[in-house]
Image (cartoon, rainbow, N blue to C red):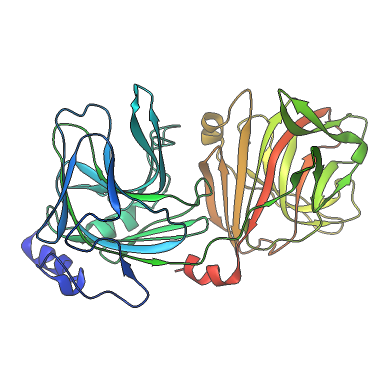
Amino acid sequence: MNNVKCFLAACLVGAAGCHSFNSVVEDGFTRLFDGETLNGWRVRGGGATYAVEDGEIVGRFDPNTKGLNTFLCTEREYENFIIKLDFKIISGNSGLQFRSAGRPWKPNPSKEQIYGYQVEMCVDSDRTGRIYDENGRGYKCGMIFLDTTPADRLASAYATFCKQGWNTLELQCVGPSIKTWINGKKVADIMDDARGKGVFGLQIHCGNSGEAHWRNIRIKELPPSPPWKKFFVNDNGKWRTDGTHFVLPQNWKFVDLNGEQVLKGVQNKDQKKDGLVITDADYDNFVARVTWRINGGNSALYFRAAEEDIPWTLKGFQNEIAGNEKDGALWHTQGKTSKGRGWVAKNDELGRKARHATGWNTVSTVAVGDRIVNRLNGFEMFDIVDPLAEKAGKLGLQLHGSSSTEMWFKDFEVMPIPPDFLELMQR
C-alpha cells in the first residue's frame, strides 16, 4: 500500500493518530486496556511474551514454543458486545480470540490450548477480518474460515489496509450474529450458534517470527441472549417433552442409550401419516438446533411451519435429515391448497464432507426476517435471503410417512431472538 493510502487508513483510527494511547472513549464503551498495565489480562497457551510499551500492548513470539499458540486473555468472559481496537502486525500471524476458552493441550496436558472464535489478523493478507475457529472447525471439510465473505467485500476492506501500520478492527457479537469491520469496511457477517460466551485473547502465533501491537481496546457490552428453551427435560428422573405435542404419539418414546436419554421414533412404511413432535408455540426469529442419529428412512427439523389437514401435517420449511449428502439442505413442503417450492437451497458437496456417516450429527437453523442460515455439524451449508420465506411458525421433528424410519433425537432446543437484537443484527 502506498504512503497516501496508509495515511488515510491511519486517519480512520480516530483521534489517536500517530499517538499510542487515546484517552477519548465513545459513549457506552469502557476500556479493556488501561494503557499502562496488563491488569485484567493473563498469558495462556505458549511461551510468547507481552509487555506494555508506549501505551501499547506488544506481543513477541517465543522461538522455543513449538506447535502451541500464545494468547493474552481477559480474565473475564463476555457474551454480547461491540469491541473496537487498533492493531499493527509487524510480522507473522495474529488474531483476536473471542467467546473462547482453554483446555489441556493433548501433546502436553500440563500446557493449555485456547479454542474458540478468532478474528484473523495478517500482516499482508485479505484474510484479515475473517472468522476462524481456533482448534475447532478451521481447515476442515475443505474450508479454512467460518465465513464465506464475497471476494469483492474482502477486496474493498483490504484496499484500506496499511501493511505494518495501524488499522482498526470492530467486532460485534449479538446472539448468533457475528460481524467484523476493518477500517470501517464490513468483512465477515455470519450466523453461528457454537459458542455464546467466553474470553478475549490477543494471539501470537507459533512459528519462526511474530510481533503484534494493540492499543485503544474498548468494549460496549450488550444485553445477554435469551436462554435456550429445551424441549426435552428431565422431570425428577423421568424424561418428557416440554412445550410440544405429538402426532402418532405411539411411535415416540424416551429410551436409555448407553446411559443417555434420547427420544426414539420408529415409523412403519405402511403408515402414510408423518410422525411428528411439534412445538406448541410459533417462532419468528430464532436459532433452533437438534442432534440426531438416523437408522433408516427420512426425517427433518421443521421450522416456520403451519399445521394443516394434510397427511404430513406440517407445511413449511424443512432442514433436511436424510442420511446422505442432502443433510442440512432446505426443502419447502406444500400445504393443502398451496404448492411447495421443493429444494430452496442445498450444498451436496459440503454435505458429503460435513456429515458423519455413522453416529450423531447436529443441524441448526438461524432465521432472522428473510435471512436463513443452515449449518451441519457447525459448517455453513448456505446463507440466503428468501423474500418468499414464511415469517413465523412451528418447529418440529419428523418421522417421514410411507417409509420405514427410525430416528434418535437429543438436545432439541430453540433460542428466540428478541426484537431489540434485530437492528444490531441488520447493521
